[in-house]
Image (cartoon, rainbow, N blue to C red; front, side, top):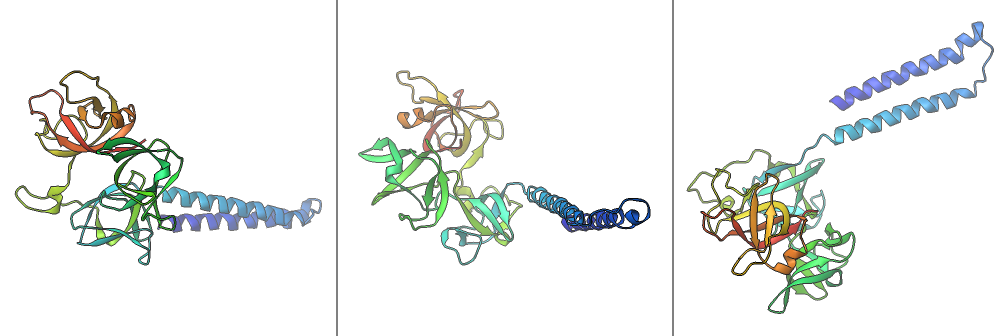
Amino acid sequence: MQLNHLRRKIRLFVFKLRDRIIWDTGERSKSFAPKTDNRSMPSVLAMASSIFLSVFLLSGVVFADEFSAFTGQISADNINVRVDSTVGSAVVCTLAKGQLVEVASELYDWYKIRLPKSAPSYIKQDLVECIGNTAAKCSNGKVTGNRVNIRLGPSESSPIIGGADNSTVVNIIQEEGSWYKIEPVHQSYGWVHKKLVNKDISVVKTGEKDDMSLQPEVLESGTHPGGSQPSARQQLVVEGTISPYGVVLWRKATHKLVTGEKGVYLLKGNRKALDSLNYHKVKVTGKIINPENKRYPIIEVAVIEVLN
């Protein structure tokens, strides 16, 4: 509605400008000005058209920037996440009713969402340097190229679902030929139809069983949202910046995670992998393993993802 109103105002302005130009080069020249060269008329009209086009394109950019990212909730079971914003594009994975999704942008009747951990993702082995080994298996790797494609399947003809930059750490699930199957990196996206995503999130009441109860709780500081520390073995997801904590005999944790609210977590995990992420902003998924009366909660790292 606002865009149409602006278009009408711009069109009216151009018509008035055109009439003014015609009066300046025509009627006034006949009465009290030397005769002008009418060949200048097209250039003036071209300038007016350029002004109109610039303002129109600028207005389109302004209105496009009005979208704000948000967390939505899937409204039905077995909802397809697709590679592109069409019903004919390939299916990446399915989502369950009540599952939360991070909506990054929109296009017509579709939302672009960040892919869940269950989505299949593949990267070529020769673009990854292994940084964590468990029983002769590479569990974590660091991307060695720039703008590396993440694909839906282990083939160069498979659709691209994301991208990774140099030094991005990936969590490796298994090897498949010359490819690694990995957990989706932060910049991995799919598309869901708008009618299947609710902006209003319904909260599950205590005691009710629902898929939402299996989702890890997102925390923003080193304390529980209610003011107390997270309980032992509680699963959570938290974002922050990693820094060394120092190696001391009998100490479980080797690194600190400092959040935006100056909360502090201690991290227990693959030391080499954590060392490679020092001073990076990351998203950590894991469980609290220390008693509740300790000053800082210790997270046993299950998944770690680089955000910058």
